[in-house]
Amino acid sequence: MLCYVCTDEQYYRMPQLFSLEDREACVRLRGDYCLGTFTLRPRTERGRELFDIMLKYSQDDRNFNHTVLHRGYCVTTRCPDLASRTSSASRPARRFLRCVDREAEAYGLRASPLRLDSCETAAGDPPPDVVDWSFAVVVAVIVVLNVAGTVYDFTRSPDEKPNQYLLPWSVRVNWRRLTATYDDGDPRLTALKSVQGVKAFTLALVMLGHSMIVHNMSYIENTRFFEQGNAHWLATFLHNGSVVVQGFVLVSAFLLAYNLLLLRDAGVQLRLRMLPAALLHRLIRIVPLHMFMVGLSATWWSRGGAGAQWALLHAQRAACRSVWWAHALSLNNILTVDDRCLLQAWFLAADMQVFVVTAAVTLWLAGRQRGGGGRGALRLLAALVAGAVAGNWLLAYWLQVKPIMLEMKPDVIREQYVGSASFKWMYAAPWGSLPAGLLGVWLAFLHHRLQRLRIRPERSKIFRLAYTWFLPALFLWVLGGHLVRHAPAPVVALYAAADRVGYVAIGATGLIGFFNGVDSFWKRFFEWRGWLPLGRMSLAVMLVHWNWHLTHIALKTTLSTVSVFEVGGHWHSVQIMSYVTALPLHLCLEVPAQRSLQALLFKTVKT
Image (cartoon, rainbow, N blue to C red; front, side, top):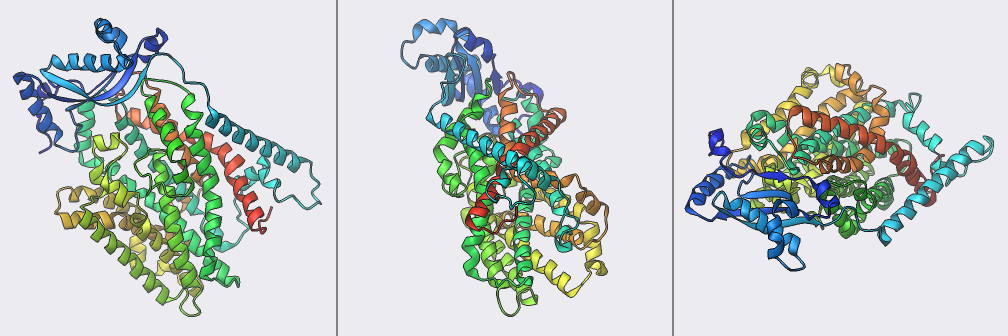
């Protein structure tokens, strides 16, 4: 059934799930403001009857657990009579518990503390510490390098050989790279310009999904509307929409493999021993900006505001200070998967781990004297994709892991998937993304073969049909997740293993058409020039947007009213702020750090 409670009268007999009082006035007047979560249990016979209703209603995993209350109270003013009855160092927390328990008593229930998020007795953060000031020094060094590089760019003689370590820090040079079209470059590479549009568009969908997630994490006023929306079949697009992230894995692996194949065409002898150098290039590309955002989240970002729900940012600050080392090693999706420092950063770690496998496979196949890029390579890659899917199926069935769509439960999302076996063992794990990565390599070998043999894919009727309908097919594939909600365990395990690779396989049809110049509205859409800078900033946007999501929610002083307009407004606001913030990150850190480190380590970078 959809739910146990079938009438509004029964629903509103239950205690309000979320309650949030004014924090600003409380702490300014030296009151005690506490935020926490409480579990309920029966206190009287009347309470037992109500508790049974709450318990049965909560068994529908599309509903919140209504036996758990979330409260943010100024205990000084809400329960002033309790001040004289407690006398210990934990007085605010004890008063908070007794205050909520008194509220529950009116329903015949008893409240027990599950988690205390915060108890504030004065406005403001503690003074900056050594970590804060150390990061400030790093920012100052970056600013100095950008000033020096830009001044050098404007003052140097065009006839002199540029300094390959200093010129990459010129903001003007990096702006030109960001906005360049490279239409006069290698036609094999300019044919791939739709990739930037695909990346930017996919990232917009990721931010939309995260908009729903952070609203789920907030203190919600209209929980009835939210839960009914969760039960609607169209909600599958949001619950199963996380598969779009695999598009980045596909594109990343494709670009890696295709560029290596072009190097081989240029006469470079590819060998497996080149893997460490390829990995180092990848680390230089990702790690500096990634660690900068970890440092920013661990220090000054949480000092940019305050609010009743600011504990979200304080929790991330503490997590980033604790697990920064795992992010530096690109192992945060394995070693510290339940520590929520930048929720989205699991992808960067998983993609790095998949990169090692796909780079090794590409170097080995492309370096073979025979069959490198021929049918044999395509058959072997197809077998590897099928093997990876089969392995994930067996793992999912053995561990009883569900597809992430079935883990999109309000209380699981609220806890940012902490403790979720599906998130840990499939969604964030590298083997969960490996099929998409291997498919990206297969796509690169296929595209390279089509070009080498001058085969036009649009001559195939089957391809033309698939290419015409690939976008509707993507939406139908995502929506199809609704059909496995009550399927038997083997089918659920199979869907957990095949869901994401099925999505990118359909998307690969569109990419092959785009890359081979098969005209369509969507090809022209994704090749729009405006996508180029947005796509190039995708790493910076990927890293910074989650902080803006949390900040927008944490700044709310009252309960959130979830609606299409509220979520849509939040989504667009986060997109704007993310790109505004990503621009200086891209120009002043991501690109200059990558190019100067490449010049230092490889001494082959063109300035």
